[in-house]
Image 1 (tube, rainbow, N blue to C red):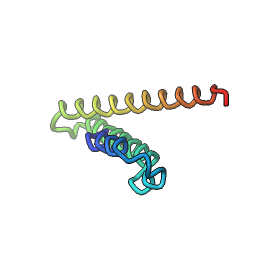
Image 2: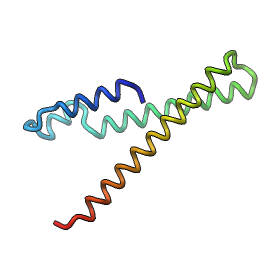
Image 3: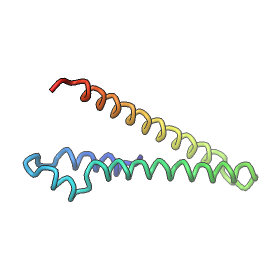
Image 4: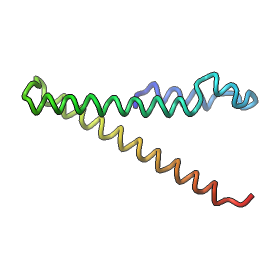
Length: 99
């Protein structure tokens, strides 16, 4: 994920709560932010796969950059999985609450 994703989270948190869900939908909303983050992680993984294929063929000029890109993609995926786990835990906690 990039710094832009973090900035969009700040924009959502600064939103006026009196405006309600309609304003959130106009500004992008949580689902669009999540979809954008998933797309960014997917693009990193696909570009890393292409770099690894080039490395296997021997068509890479800079091995260090390939390894850096691979590590960035791995870290992005791990972050995505941790966020998913936290969201699932929060959902399960909400479902356990009595009304």
